[in-house]
Every structure is written in structure tokens, then in C-alpha cells.
Length: 89
Image 1 (cartoon, rainbow, N blue to C red):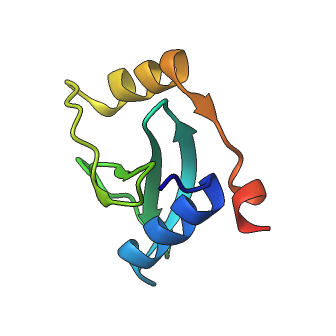
Image 2: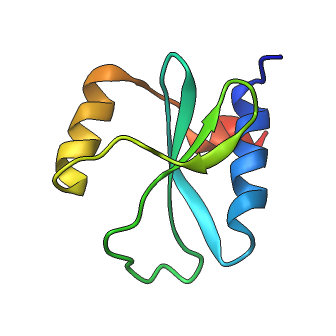
């Protein structure tokens, strides 16, 4: 079974609950990576992105980086950005 990006967004949103909101999505060959923040916009440091695999399983992203900048650079180079507005429709 393979899910769509919209289905992955819904899975990640339900997993995070009402306290967090997704602010960024990157598609990789085997999963979608969702960055999120607190719903009130407060900053959270050292937070792992949520990963939803193409089979629908959800967990924290298992790839480790020295810091968030290195991780976001890697995602930009290796993935495809998907605008959140497209996933909410």
C-alpha cells in the first residue's frame, strides 16, 4: 500500500495533535518529512521532524544531523519541497 502526500499530511497532523502545526513538508523517495512548531508559534529547540513512510507508518525522522541547519540543507538538496497549502486542500 502506498499513500499520497495529502494522506501523509493527515497522518502527521493527527499524530501531532492540536498542540502543534506542520509548517514544512519535504518528499523523499521513501517518505515525507514534516517540520512543525507549537501552535502558538513559540520556538522549540532540538525537535525532531515527523516522518511518514509511504506505507503510512509514522515516527520521528531517524536521520541524525549535527544541527537543524545541516538537516534542512540536506533535505533541500535531496528532497522535493511540497507547499503546505497544497496538502490542506
